[in-house]
Image (cartoon, rainbow, N blue to C red; front, side, top):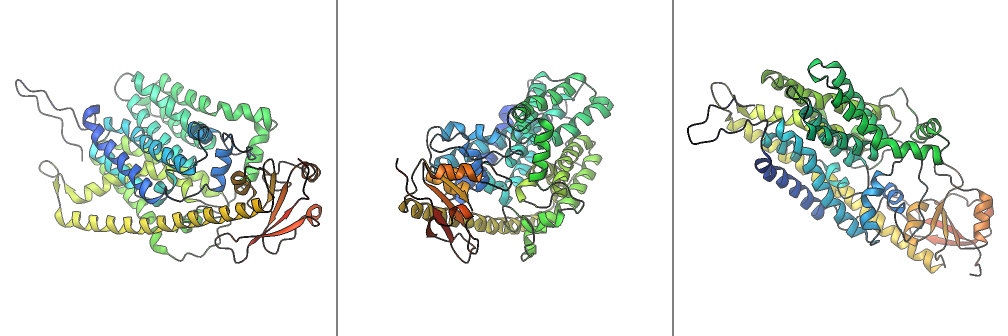
Length: 505
């Protein structure tokens, strides 16, 4: 796939740079085109009518001036809240927030691909970006306030800048700065994923003789420490120390179990945002065809890379991808977004393998194999069609839930729920955020108050206890005024609310 060394330049002409070190002006149109297509696809297919999810609401509420912040549990990090803060501080419009994230995620993709212009042919890197963007979860989470896609961008950029920094006899200073910044960004978004990125990069800087440069190792470790510093400091300020926060985070995430979650991730590809517990039947196996194709295509890409004497450039992304994917295989639940970093990194060797299947390099420059190319185009079109259908279902489900929550909040307001107020129980986080109330829980992973405090709040302000059908209200609220609420999508019956007696403002 990599062309031979360029011939000496003719008199009066400049020699063309090798494909693995393309200057910025030549690479920018390719990467900008991919990033623009990604952004436009989000604006057309995802942004309209999608409301905030439960996790999104938690992140956004931390910086929203119009509503109290939701409980911030131990596993979470502040990176996403910082990312959305510039928009949330100005407006409470979800559509404006989606637009902001769609544009910024397009820029993030461009920056993630940028170092690879110096490592692989630019068209190959651009096609890898398109493959990654063609997945339904990459499109779905582009305009969402969730950390996993940003971790994918950070990991892809960090791996590329690492390889740039260790090329040649000396370290590239700009690559070192970009490497440290990419690792720090990843750790800021999700400290656990930052650790999964740190381990293979630091290990490569120590174990590979030609990559042993103290400044490279310092950039990787320093970036991880800088990005995770806020999470560590917050652990001592609000969670009783680092060990206590780690223990609580493990407890909330279900702990590590022996059974692998591979089949859970496979079933979640049908469009489930979260599969917990993952007991859903596997009704649409076609949604996982590409998932089963990734391992052999990755192996094929590594084989091609070894033949063109570029094994490290494609092997390191595979090692980093495995490091970032393995921890999620030992949880008792799955979500498609968890493996986005692995998919972004594996797109490079997969693309190399696909291009080698449709081209031949024997006896001269690469030539297209028409039959193989036509078959590959048809397969990719079928793959994109499946991704489009799954994306449509996920977007429709999100829009339906958003409309239902709007009806629920409208009914609660009609019943007298006005800020300052408190909501507890089922879907308390999203209902409270939309109503301008505080969300409180007396038990569970997000417990942040006690029954006594909740009863005391009810004496000063409206309090609503929301329960699902068939669930009895807590004892302290059984004498409160009852109200029926609209059903959420997928629920046979509606929700119920108990509202505290009116208080004098």
